[in-house]
Length: 316
Image 1: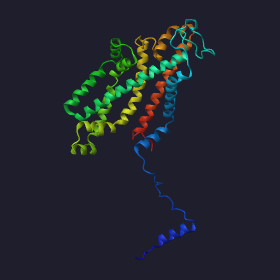
Image 2 (image 1 turned 90 degrees about the horizontal axis):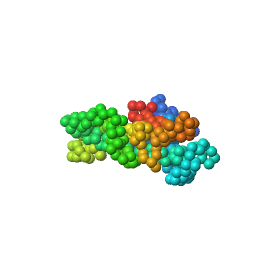
Image 3 (image 1 turned 135 degrees about the vertical axis):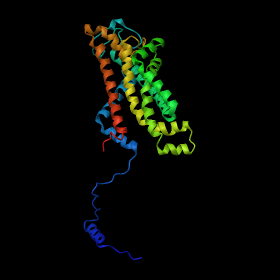
Image 4 (image 1 turned 90 degrees about the vertical axis):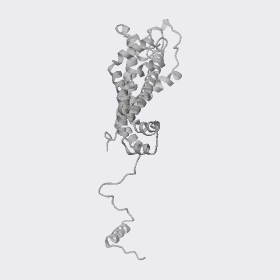
């Protein structure tokens, strides 16, 4: 078969041959980029957010400081030594000692372990319960949805701090039990958020297709609804960590913190508050700075994740 070359095509071929085989100019709309998955776009958006990256860096530093630090900076944190009580910062003790003669940096590491463990564990329990509750409520609809949401409304109407204080007086103050207390009233907001997301997802075509193919409600919840609402839970869990760390510090100030010898940053601040007028600044300000930085970092990470995962907020 004979090929016919139009004059315009022959002119372009001649231009490419004379120009050393250069490719034609890109289209007027610009070059087309390769199609990327939603997670890659979210990661690129998150990394471009400098404040969010700084927040991740701060969290990594405090996690290493709290859990890896005691293996590097080894101090006596088991036997009290009243002779060393209230020593000011020096070469032997970089941030001084507390009332029991314990090194203050070692105390900050132990307090960081408890604060981060309780914050992370309480947030994890709250997000799991809230996600399941909200997904089931949104999928069920009707009277079931109405009844489950009224439970959430009743829980939200109870003052959070008052409810947590009542539970804290009943349970013993261990790390797990304090996490359970803080999570008991922290799952309500995630439940509402996930339920709202599921109300929109259940009308999508892929959910209807699964229903037509005979998928059970359990499969719809765990296979389609929760995975597609994961962005809401990821963002919310960071804010839950910040809220539970602050709530733990509040409980410690009110005398319902961890029992001795366990300690948290809130317990250290509560114990040091009585010595503020005596000039023992190293007992009060270091745990306060740690608390503020961790809460600030988790909020920065949460804001970055929200901007990266929400398509409406993502920069083009």
